[in-house]
Structures are given as C-alpha cells and as structure tokens.
Length: 429
Image: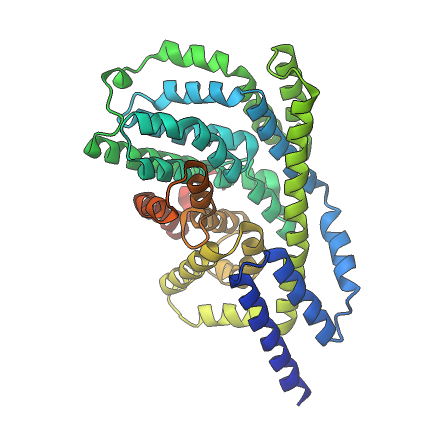
C-alpha cells in the first residue's frame, strides 16, 4: 500500500511538473520542484542531499571554463574582431556559389571555435550577415535558416561548452572530447556548405561573378587582419591539445590575450566594454549551474527508482542492434527537440548509456554522438533555440525559418546517423 501511494504521489508530481513545463515555467523551477518533491516523499533521500549534491557537483574546477569561454566571445564582439573573422571566412569559401551564405557558415565555425557557444555564434553572425544576404537576393527566411543552421557547428567543434558540461558530469576527459569533436564538426561544416552551395546555385541566390574568384593572397591578407581572433583559436586548442593548459587555463589565457591585443591595437578603449562583456558571462553561468544541480538531482532520483535500468532493458529487448540504434535516435531527437541542452544531457544520457555500451561504443564516441543529436535539436521545433534567436533578430516568422531549415536538418541527421552506424569514421575519437 505504501509503495502504491508513493508511486501515485510521484506520478501526480510528474504530471504537475510537465504541465508547468509546457505552460512556460522556467526549467530550473520545474526540475527543482520535482527534486524537492521527491526528497519530501522518499525518506531515503533527505532534503539536505540537495545542498550536498550542489557542493560536490560544482566544486569541479573545469566549470570555470564556461564563463571564460563566453567572456572570450563577448570581448571579440566588443572589440569588433568578429568583422575580421567574417572577411577571412569570405576569402576562404566565399568564392563558391552562395558566397555570403557560405561565409556565414564558415564564420560560424571559426567563431564557435573561439566562444564554444552556438547561441552567441548565431546571434553575432545573424546581426552581421543577414542584412547582406537579404541585399544580395537571398530569400530572407532561407538566409535566416542558413545562419541558424551554421550556429550549431559550435556545439560539436571544440571548445564546445556542452562538451565541457558533459565531461564534468560523467567523468569523461574534456580534452579527449575536444579532439573527438573535430572530425564530426568538420563533416557538419562541409555538409552545411554543400547544402547551401547547391540551393544557392539552383535558386540563383547571391550570384556574383566576382564571388567565384579564388584569391589565395586575399586569404593571407585577411588572416593577418584577423590575427587576434585566429590567434585565440591557436591558444585555446593548441594549448589544450599539446597539454600545456587545461580547458579552464586555456580560456583564462585566451581572455588575457584578447584583452592585451585589443587594448594594444585600440580595439578596446573603455573599461565599460570589458565590464559589460563580463556581466554577460556571469549571467549565463548563473543560468546554467542551477539547472545542472537540479538535473543531476533528478538523475540520481531516477536511478533510485530504477527508471534508467528499465529503459535500457526495453531498448536491448529489441534484439537487433539496428533497431536499438533506431530507437535511441528517435529518443534523442524527441528529447533534443523539447529540452534545453543541459537538462537533456543530465536526463537522457544516463537512460541511453547502458544501451550505447552494449552497442560497443566507448564513452568518448558515445558522448560525441549524443552531442550531435543535441545540436540537431537547436534547429528542430518546438525548441529550436537557434531558430528562435535568428527569428527574434530578423523579425521573421519562426515557422518560415523552420521550413527553410529542413534541408539542413536532413543533412545533419544523415551525418549523425553515419557516425552512429560507423563510429570508426571518427578517426580521432
């Protein structure tokens, strides 16, 4: 009788939290309510466990890297270094059909490799390149969809903030995750460029005879002009891969480097610019970390209830590895389309990891496969964070942008399925 009452109470609590979630209540409050309700109902878990969990989870030094990476991106915006990155990207791949669209995708890859944030990348590139794409004859919603799709590259390419969160949560080496994200990230980049080039050629978007002139000397010139931004990438990734810095140390050195170079070159002239950029970083960390604590608490509670084992057994009962993989992909697509990234990582990964291990995936490879699925969620309704960001910036209807993002979505799912089915393709994992 007690067990039945507990089950009914937890079911009622879950239904209430789902109603609050779909009613627009912030995810942290929904998660926190469920966790506290669970602690109240289950005597084995006292409420004091929340404070103990918060301390043990957040004492990891690696989390320091998150606000520092965000600060790097904000400083680049304040110093107008992003303009130089755009010109370098245009010189590298702007000669292809759909030159400005490809420039937005290439710029997203470079910018995300500096900031590690897809949201910041989408916002920055959208403000800079959507007006030129509109002027060059691109359909406005297609241009917005291209920028939103390019913004997801930063989720997979190092130094992705989500790779840091994943590594800390599950004890996977963050440098190993960074290395393993290179090949899939580049594959996604090339896939996005291929889709845009094809569609631009078919629809006569941005066609300009001068756009097809490949000029190596221009690449050299724009690379020198973008030396601060490109130098930041060298410090961040080179220092981590060689083993000189941890991710947190590399981010701190990158912040110092950008400040030093920007002040020396006259790109940052007021203390107000630095203070404003720092405030954004503090705001973001204040949003992410409470969600991490609440999500990890729910993860422990679900493990106590045996939910993770039940899901794993249900998946493995399908028998065929291909059916198991297909079911996992459907689950990841579903959760990625309705959950924000951190809750998705905290809740979905433990449910699917046992099945992933049974399929023969190592922890690093599985992490990258999951992060790709999470990245796809950024252009998948109803969540589609990148779609919302670009829709807000351009004032274009969300559904129009979503429709024009479908070709990119199809390509992303194809790349994801390929790396899931043939993990050996990721030679660096």
